[in-house]
Length: 341
Image (cartoon, rainbow, N blue to C red):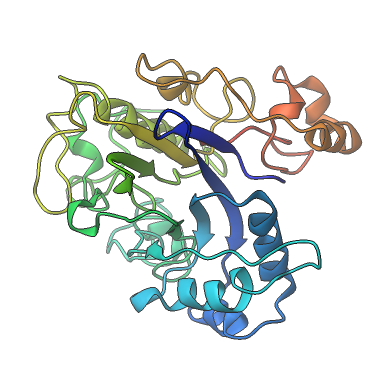
């Protein structure tokens, strides 16, 4: 589907196109995505690149983009796909500035986080993943990224968020996580990045993330609670007086300075009306007083897909034209989960 996009005014007559795209450029083994994209010819990467070449965002977040050190996967995708016309009627597109960084996915926690009696595997990683960096993120920009001012929150502990919705055992009300596990469990399932991007004389903070999906959950709702609080991190980051508890990976405390321009983007895995998320999760951003959520991307193709798939889609309360992801009809159905705000 067409990635959600917004135009942000960088000057009196200069709109800038920001976009987010869960491209699923991830593989089941470390290094396989790099192998697949190291030369032209991968059908999936070609289709993703063609969509980007047609929509031509100036600043782009790609979710589910396996992490490789030294920008290796990003460089391969740029050289072999974005930089090569993928159809006779589209031009190549170039991004001079790229940012990738490690993700919590697949990084062993050393604890039994899912309480199955064993330690190890994707469910016991800091973020679900078969290997470190699976389902990572990448940002491509035609405008300078101020690399020296980037803030990341990959190591921020869930327990350090005041009023965190930490899971409990439904039968007893006791904490789901052991004390030892709680001392290391990170809030971000991938990472949260604040990327200052210089557009003319203005710096826009590109706030990007990819919270865990509120699915594959038991009655304790570990993933739904984490999804809620991952979204909340950005809501608090934007709110003067509410962000003092936040500490980034460099040890700097606090949130965004008042009056700083920003764009929040990413696959938030939360629909405002449907799906398995906790009520009010994405509303923390959609109803934030500093966020303009009045424009929602719409697609007749999304409406047709929901009608064709049927099932739970027929019972959804949300407008199917706003769906950005297609899930199983026997699961949550098609949902609006991707945002540029």
